[in-house]
Image (cartoon, rainbow, N blue to C red):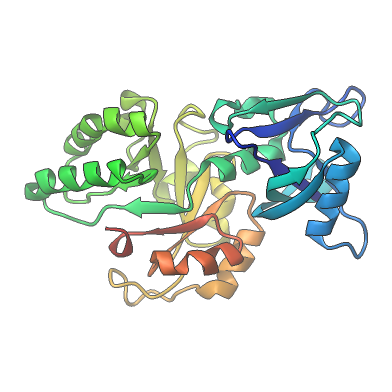
Length: 309
């Protein structure tokens, strides 16, 4: 079953949520408004029709956000979310459902239907994910200044990946940067260091290595601290579901750090992303020039090292 979901975003950056009414599946939970696509109907056209029937608005501009394959027991669906930034009319409850406008960061994951939780994460996540380059410990001051400039310039999510540094030094760097990051709404992620993220608190997450993904049966951090998963195939992506908020999938192209690794290419990337509910970043040989191909392939965006600093 192909279901369209409209993420209406108003001039303040708020999104519209609708509550599932009593007597329906997942009653009481909130979702992004929409409904079933009719046979032969184009997704964008189906969304326009559903929003008109449900809210009385005419959507005029929309763009793809994420496609979430999901299973509710024996019921399988593809939840196809599109961002709607322009419409005519004032949204009204034509189906008797409660409506509310919320800023994305003020929405609790637990109030949403499970499939819609992935839509919220895709909405919250940036389209670029910057990863620090390998550097000796002697370069700490240089990188601290570089990261401060990046945060000030608007970088929204940064993985502090310094393989040569002891964890304590990376935690100290994160603690130094954290006030500026919090003030600007930026997220810092530690590489594999769950305990460090827990100690530093809100605004600091973790990027789990592929070998770590299976160590937890449920997420090891609160929902306010994001978890990424480093994935290379369908098995990795499957294990990350329920643990991570997003994934990186690599290598999409040939990289300087792993020149002998066989790249996935965009076709395989698309197939893997289509089968996963998670927002997925393309990683490996990426620069911002690959953002549009990554988005067209169903990805959340691009992640990288050399092309981001």
